[in-house]
Amino acid sequence: MEKGIFLCMPPNVYVESSVISYHTARLNRDILILARQQITEQWWTHALKTYTLYVSGVVLEEISAGDPVASKKRTELVSGLKILNASPKTEKLSEFYLKYLGLPMKAIRDAAHLAIAVDCPFQQL
Image (cartoon, rainbow, N blue to C red; front, side, top):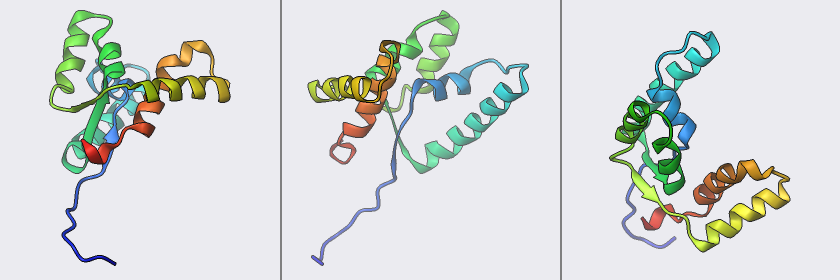
């Protein structure tokens, strides 16, 4: 094994829009949704200290939509996170996932999340 200096970097995590939405939404009266919200809030607090968190342009588009007050809250939550951008390669990978996983066209953004998270060279950022 080659000798050298190895830096311990925190693991990288791609954060998808639903995590951000659960974290910032008003508490729900449905007990299952409320449980997910509480788990997400606890995870977020832990994740900020433990991981390098990333979002993508797709995430930013999704969390910017809808109610302006809620949108602002979601956008502010991720304001300090690193942003991954789609590339021609990730767009082709998204199309591949849609076709070969048999995903419906309405899942194009989900395929994009997967492609960006899988293809992005985190270590070069």
